[in-house]
Length: 215
Image (cartoon, rainbow, N blue to C red; front, side, top):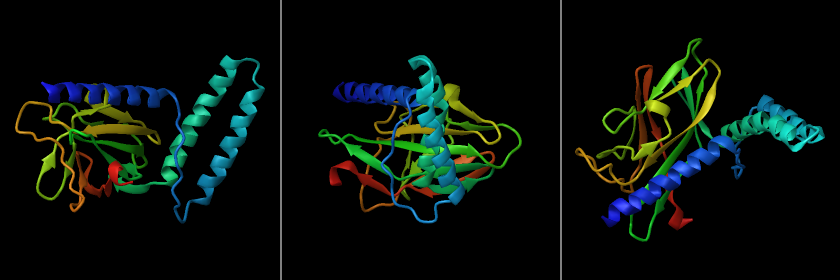
């Protein structure tokens, strides 16, 4: 019962974070990365200039309306700056590393946050992650496959139009309580991979996980 209560708290917290992040652009701690594309840096310069000009709008509502799309694009570009890119068929996944949260009760939770962009198709592409038995994204440690605990895929799918990018969040932690699934475990001596198995392509992305308690 205690485990179910803790999982409920974790799930609600995750849902709130995803909801807030979908509406309020957040800032990122910049990680040094070499060979940042010059055009990306130039675009960020233009966006930051445009953001300042939004302050000239007549009222706070118009300022917010002006700022929102600019802040959204800045958030996307800044995430790309600190990420590694992995091309899987028509989709490019950007991953910036991840931290594992271990509670005092030794419950392990990892929120996988990635940016997915349709860079290679002239048609819309669907990413799929529904229930525990129907998801194309798992974590693998070379021996055990871990099933997600929750995610922010609306109705189990994320659709990306040509050139469109979107952040996706998949939470790994306590098992969902049915089927032959196990709680997510973290061992710093092991390597963890995100296994992608979509109809348009497959990949194993190294996650390079670290524990928050060790930072």
